[in-house]
Image (cartoon, helix red, strand yellow):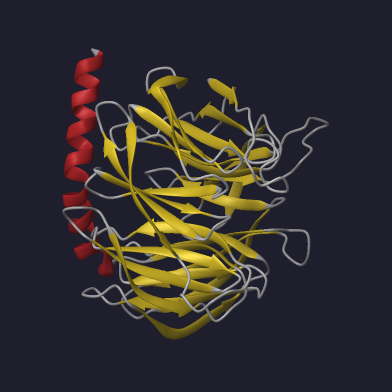
Length: 388
């Protein structure tokens, strides 16, 4: 297939995806889901835990430990919900300055995970991974290693040798946190033509051209979008329309809004807002960010203030307006996830060992606690899949 034909098919797919997602959301209440929980295992946890979730009744049934593995601090699943992939956030892997990436087969009836294979991440402390839009490659960000890598994923779930590896270089003004590069997030653009990586140490969103045929990364023009000095970009979330992107900045507790040029893979800064209440002066680190599937709202987590900041999104300009700051009823909310129906938001409070469930108001985006609190040691990553 010619490259132009492949690009057109991907563009068509991503254009239709929001419509399909909305259709799935309407049908979703008849389905049940598995909720997988990644953790840090330096204390009580032993790996990945799971729950069965019914969005109609809001019932959550614990399935316990479903896989023993070290520091599975970020999780993803393939599009067919057959396999789950986890980073193993380590500084040493088989004697190398590297962490690991583990592939598991999912038993959707029981929630149990079976190890398929494990590969070195090619850099210390991998902290994020994602699939490209074709579902053929897994992209990994190595935090302490300051690098990104791409791994082919076979139909049997096996991860192969890396098809691409890029070592970032440079530093930022914060001598304690930005002494070198710290890749913290990487995903492909909605049309799969570019790969964007947030580097906390460089105050940059690094942009690569991504080849979906061979999984390669090459420098883009422009090669990066620069953020304000010392903000420490952590994660990025695209708007469903593909025209806007939002970056949560860990070190300054802010969100930077960007316009996105789909033809050039270029980000244009629109503005920056705080994730914290005006009267809060304590320590805080920004963590996770998600745009709601309906494109109307954006959520970001605060570690220190221990809250979720809720924003409305102007559909024409992409600008953000604060709607609510709601406490997470726990300590150090790291990752949070919107359930597949779009009705609930689950927050993983790392240091209090609990996951708190909130209901999302479909008109305002405001969060209301459901009263459901799950006890999980050191939860740091959440991932839903349709149950068998």
